[in-house]
Image (cartoon, rainbow, N blue to C red; front, side, top):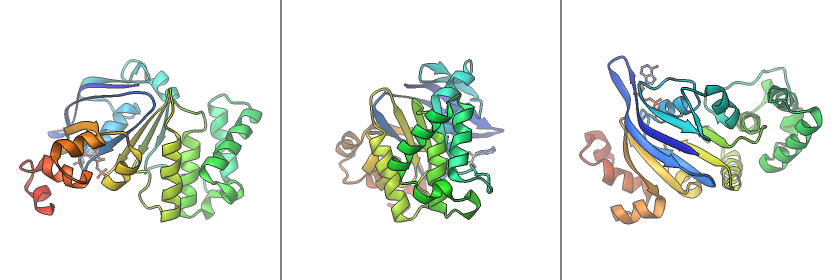
Length: 247
Ligand SMILES: Nc1ncnc2c1ncn2[C@@H]1O[C@H](COP(=O)(O)OP(=O)(O)OP(=O)(O)O)[C@@H](O)[C@H]1O
């Protein structure tokens, strides 16, 4: 489902990603972890065809991000911080219009909206205008919009940030329920405990480099630590003075 080979990205003289290779399979919730500036967003933007890599290649759902960007875009749903909603439209109108972009009929759209209402507890957000939403309501509709076409690969970039505990719980339960054959969820976060709860395998990035990749219990065993956060500090010790101080 995801195959990344020797991917690098530089912004001028700054290297945001350095020679990253990893794979993830169907049925997984795969975590992308690392502190601010680790390169998570850069990597996810390359996978979403929003950014060109400087070197290396990546394929998503069997399609090369450089050569088949349209096919990649049809196969993915993306949630990132920069997504607004049209203030004057209700949640239902937003979701229906996105369903239309993907060629779904009104009946198909309404069936899917009902499914997402149940899964994400959209409730009154469906008939409230987006301009009146709380952060949690907005994020739920943004997530519903990203999965309206039931994408093979769902990309969530810091999707829980800014959510209260209720909205966060709904999101984490939704991600856990999205784990099924033929589907992959990429879940990026700097909150390691969130990853521990929902992810099967994780890649830890630090300063643009892949520090480790593996199943969470395997990483804990390998580092002899109790939590992913402690494992992170153990793994990056020596790479960066600031990170080691915080441990
Ligand atoms: N367009 C750009 N021009 C120059 N530098 C950039 C650009 N975009 C990102 N960077 C730098 O690349 C590094 C990686 O950024 P990126 O956003 O990928 O990290 P991140 O792991 O997602 O962290 P955060 O959680 O802070 O977004 C950062 O140091 C950032 O300042």
